[in-house]
Image 1 (cartoon, one colour):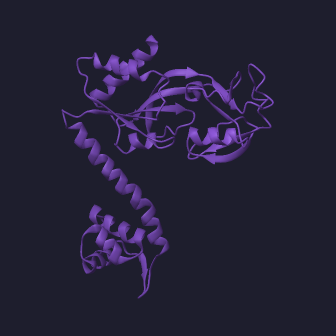
Image 2 (tube, helix red, strand yellow):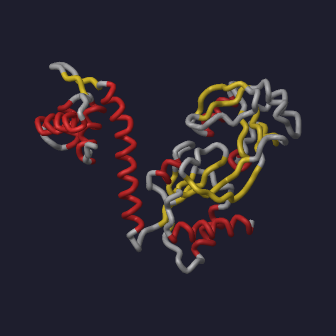
Image 3 (spheres, rainbow, N blue to C red):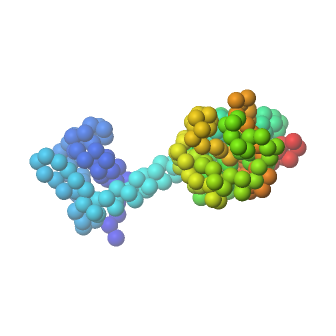
Length: 285
């Protein structure tokens, strides 16, 4: 089996993404002839042609497309392994927690206080992620732990502890047909249109229509005010409530869970300590 060096893979991915040897060489900080020679050497070693070259352009062969797809994952895995190893060996390392702004169900202050009281506590750096990328922060080593919402976030490759379980609320325009009710059911929402959250699998009412794609709560609220959609969210994510919209409990919707998640292969003592403190703090509320 041909051995593949990380540097060779980096060179190939740069060319495959740019489809131009000159631009790729500039990005890598090496001479173009050296880059061209390295890619040809790679093709020779693995025994397949990766690129079609002409005087005007560079294109990927099917083999090149396959190596680009898997090569990106391989390079990301190597980077994550190095970062995790570096942090595991750093006794002065801080713990990094990634959250969505407002996505802590008002538990974070108590969690930090509980962790800060432990004799092995370290400095905690708070990182802010988007609606869908926080799990990736943990998987690739940018963060040690994350606050995520189940069943919305992808838990692949992660372990987690549930901190709180909560119901969901429907967010409606004030003149909506359901706004006059004190509570609603999934059947009430069956003919409604709910937004599609970018990067999040569909978790709306089973028979509801899928409406406009949104990336965050601000976009969803704007669409609700325009009458283009309604939304159904975990109760804590629907706060603070806006006076120009109606918020009604969906009494038979499946509950959502706020969870603390970490990589399955992360066995660092500071992560375990933080998890224990977080679970204890959540139970005490």
